[in-house]
Length: 343
Image 1 (cartoon, rainbow, N blue to C red):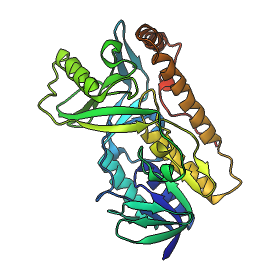
Image 2 (image 1 turned 180 degrees about the vertical axis):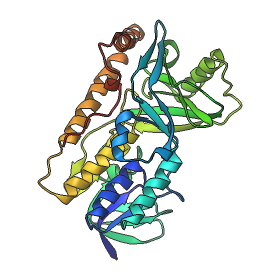
Image 3 (image 1 turned 45 degrees about the vertical axis):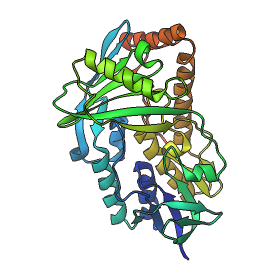
Image 4 (image 1 turned 90 degrees about the vertical axis):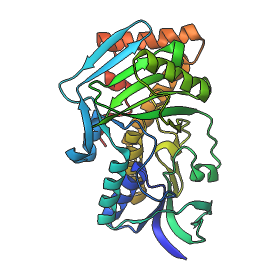
């Protein structure tokens, strides 16, 4: 049985960020990815402005937006800043770039490697290979096997439905229509020659079929044709119950660190992956960055819980939120999982 210092289950942005940082410090790291290729995933592709701290090259950004158009049942506002507020990225290209960078510093990546069983110090893959580890990191998404192996339930789930539509879309838009989407929203996130157009909501309050029909109804009212296209859907875990469990770690969606309010998860995946690596490297490391990320996550969940009450209460909460954004009482970055990293 071959043994690695750290085995990471899942080759998403969080797992690759964790692997790269560990390998840069001379650790022997294996990333096990169940799919045949690194990168592709159902994703709107929006990264908040603080994502620039990850050092991504400019060629990775599809589009950058200094303003955001936000609409609700009663209001419409445009949030502006001198610098880009959100950038869009192609999830496949991002994954390939991060994988190339990881391999360049010594990370081993095995695709088509579905993990079937996890023990205290080894994992067993579908091909029958057993691999040992000193540390195990679960970066395996909302249906995380590592999370299940730790005995951690997942109850708070969002659902995102996405279409990738060809065309030139000039604005990034958020539509908080409570009559159609309850506590969720529809979006238009422009990329280079296409736009991600979709809808996100808490699964416990909105059935997927009804949510899809509401998205179609909204799209028709905006002269966007979706029904002839093939949608893609994904579950988004925002049920955070911890991230550090002895020599086991959970990061990103596996930890439930996606925002329950917006569904955004790339930023928190990368940050938590990096912080897991720093904690592995130094047992005395105390992550203020994770404390900040977790507090922001809790704030988003509290707002979502308030908006998930009766229909009128939910509408008033979201309208108040947009009023705060429109008047500047609430900064737009309050809706992002990003923050200034100081640790």
